[in-house]
Length: 169
Image (cartoon, rainbow, N blue to C red; front, side, top):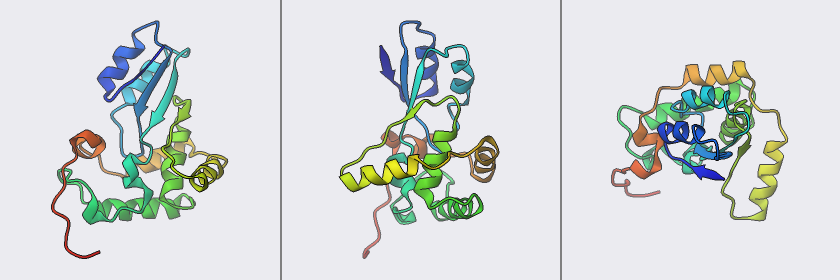
């Protein structure tokens, strides 16, 4: 029996239910809201944790320009993407997708990662990326240190609001 949750509170409640053996939750390199869940998971090694939204609805693909990001408090999308690009180079990753997936895959309390794919070439690319080493603890700590704490308005797609897009490409 499993549950898909949106918030850390829901995840912690799920871990209290002995009949639940699978929990799916959103997790990506910007989202530190689930740190308490990682600790609570230690008491429930029988629970399979599945991460979704590793690419945050595509925002962490490197293909979304800053002007297309949702409004998110004081977060500057251009600066955020620049920091992510610097981390890609510093940590020797192929690109932002590789960094984002390697980060989530490296979390020791996460058992699986779900990706939304539409084409066979995306499946092949995902399989190739999942065959590379995940980020180790030191690299994940470096990512957390380099990135700002992001508000729920960015981390939770159900709360996204957008400015009017600029004219042109």
